[in-house]
Length: 132
Image 1 (cartoon, one colour):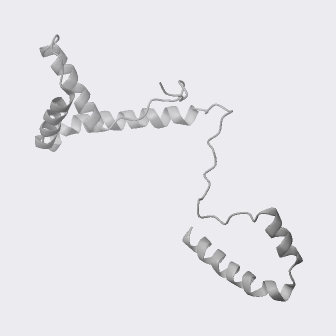
Image 2 (image 1 turned 60 degrees about the vertical axis):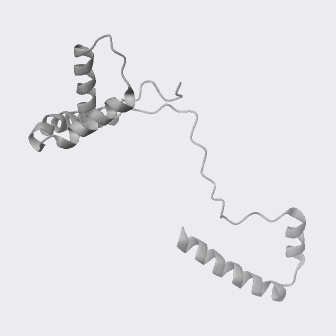
Image 3 (image 1 turned 30 degrees about the horizontal axis):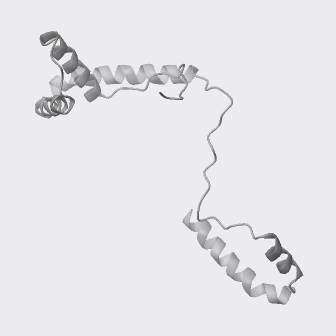
């Protein structure tokens, strides 16, 4: 399914994710054979979460903090595999390289004729760099 590294630490879970996991376990205990409509189940969990007090949510927030600490601890020792690196992002707005013939024409042009174009290019480059 995914091309990710199987040794990479599992991501940290939020307090809400722990709550939904607990709800799912409770539902399986009460209704072991029943099939679950995911959208309805999610809506019910969401409503329950919204009506819970801060004290009730505290248990799940503590679980999330512990999981975050676990994740950070594991990420400190995790070394990503060498090899395939992500393809470098190419900015579609970056100036393009001139075709060969145009380059030759430009090189054969007198410096006085180039000056207004070079000034304009410098202004546009400055504007581009300011934007990015």
